[in-house]
Image (cartoon, rainbow, N blue to C red; front, side, top):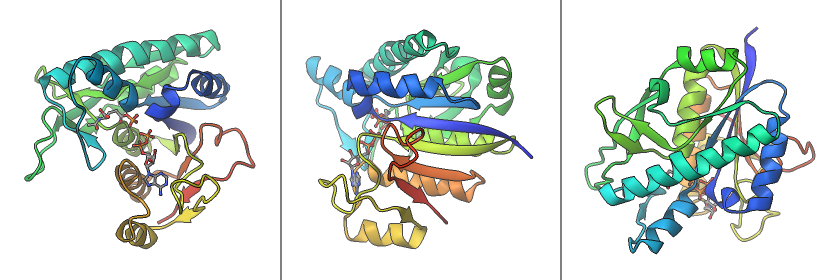
Length: 259
Ligand SMILES: Nc1ncnc2c1ncn2[C@@H]1O[C@H](COP(=O)(O)OP(=O)(O)O)[C@@H](O)[C@H]1O
Ligand SMILES: CC(=O)N[C@@H](CCC(=O)OP(=O)(O)O)C(=O)O
């Protein structure tokens, strides 16, 4: 049997809520198995961009990343947020190590190419380095990845944090029994986005297509669900979407993805 590995991703709205973040990190630090945290921070990056006079542009849940935006997201994700999260985990006796995809060459990506949309310096993941990440885990370190990758040609790339979580889970499932948990500010995928009690508890692929068609899922939820199914299809054991307490509150409702 493979050793178990929990991979959690935390979204930008939770990161912007200091009390919710503190509580999440306290409980994350207590997870007894090997674990990895991936964090976004889109909300903070948008705030910073606006303060600097740049208008944030998102298309289908992904940020159009020109050079000035790349500088801002690198500072916000790989600097401010990553280091604060690592320091908070250290406070909770979790020996975290903060990384971008360039560190240790952990996540290799290429510029996102979509014919009709120029995303600029946004990246899509090519591969992850299972050996290096496993070596960190075996040294009792807890990797904390931000949403910055590189192309091995000196170029940093802004990469959707949900995609990073999914790709890390897929790559590492060759060696570990991986459970992937997406934590964000709502209780799961909702029938009515304004009603936090309307959690859809199970979604398979045909149901996802129907939810898309009926516009029940939109914006950032689209890439999140696509990433969930990609992970399940490529060997990840279990994928869940829920609130920041979903991994320790057993009675908390959430969305489980099934094939
Ligand atoms: N059916 C839905 N259920 C829950 N959230 C939804 C739904 N449809 C769209 N969304 C939107 O998707 C957002 C989550 O995506 P995103 O902002 O990318 O999350 P994260 O903060 O984890 O990166 C929610 O804040 C919500 O506004
Ligand atoms: C290319 C792209 O869209 N990158 C994302 C990376 C951060 C992210 O994914 O943050 P959340 O998890 O908080 O949404 C962005 O800049 O918004």
